[in-house]
Length: 198
Image (cartoon, rainbow, N blue to C red):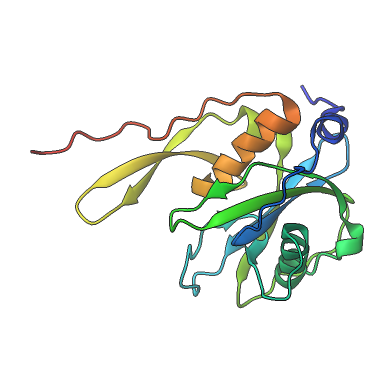
């Protein structure tokens, strides 16, 4: 069942935090303003040094001239997807998240028109796609195998639009559900953790 009030709920519940803390990076969680809202996601280019081929939100590192986390998120979204900052209705932010490399990332949430024209920046983005907010909320966490030096770990992931959403991006979505929609999605740190040989 589609809840027509999802975007209204987000607008009611989300705010910008009163204490400003400069993040190392910021992302834009852009959601289409329609009865079945969709979340804008990108697949990073396989040529990138960091997180190549991974699904992420548009975003990136702070530049010296960036005056706020919002500016970082909007600038990066425009650079990566050609999203016009004036088409984004900002509604709030989510708690700071820490990336694997220790970088502090601020998620900024905004609504965008359903039929927005976007163009992937080929040096950074392989694909732009939209995933149903409702579907993301309901998608069960499935194990995603990540190989480290001597072991394989299984992280929870969401499978949407033939893509795997895991890691920081998935944690930000879980945070969006909790703070923006009062929906607590079960999200363990690891799934089916293999037994380690002594």
